[in-house]
Image 1: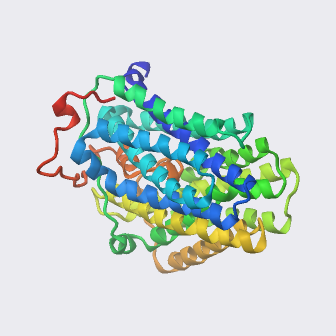
Image 2: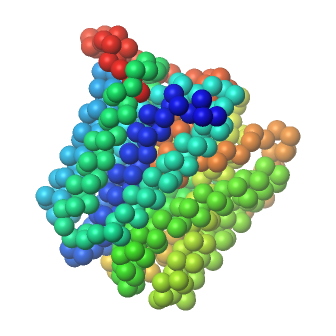
Image 3: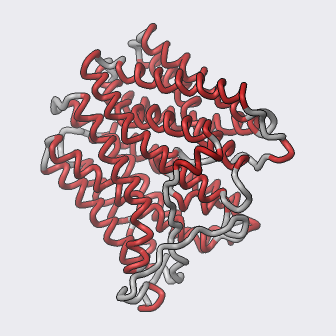
Length: 436
């Protein structure tokens, strides 16, 4: 296995730097913004801005790579990601942070797509599953480490903004110094909600609602933890533990969904999440241990939903279209991620910290109701006709290239790549620029 990992070690290291810096940036902003007196609505808009940039990055990054090549695009995106963090340190106001956060989302999506494209080009079919699992674990450890490092210093200074910018710059080094050739053009996905809806109404509605729920929590969990009186280390744990719990819970949920109607498994996860929602509101835990235990149960449910939804949609998809379906669902998730933090932020401004979990309650109740309705109207896919459940990174860290990496071009029809313009300059492979 070590022999197979060595050729892609630069890619894994570059991805780890990206996710570590992203983890720092995602947590320092709500913590610092809350300390500076930003309203919950303004902090929610940070998540909305990031989601808008992320969706646009998934759509437009393939065109940028088609125009100037992988290595140039990757360098520009990492540079602007570093610039964005530094601008947030210099301009401590929501009027600057919200649009700059959108730039961060765009850069992060594009850079992640390029890394995954390179990785996909270097992975053999026989080891694809293991490599994808290692890649997912590396990213999970990196984003968790980035969030936890916030607890080691003073969030009111310049330090963590500078560290985030440095790490984004370091993400350039492993790929720039490697001599591997550049891969094929990036996977290009168009959003066809009508086709997705005809394929699986449950998947479209559920993934949109999961986008609302998960993005609301991902953006404002630190704000909630701060406003119920948790310390800085506990705030970092409150944001990190749910993601780790969700990574572990994907295994039993996936095992169950391969053996029964995936929609019923989705309902179980949504009921589980709803119980945690209600506990946060009705019990209103104040102590550190109670909050961390409850948020772990919450994360185990909400972060296991997305891969179950994708697997259910692919069960209904025509053969050879799973990358298109998975990429389209990711963009629908992105639309929910745009709406969720805005709604939750307004709710927290009006009624206090519990407004976060009132938002997730509505999302989970609607998911349960519509999924039960569809279960009554449509028979499940026979187990013999199902595909295999695929463990997935958190959807906010996934791109259309993640689906291509997980499925593999040898197992699915490739999507139409973004064509280079007629007057495009030479690509990386043509002009001799090294790839990772």
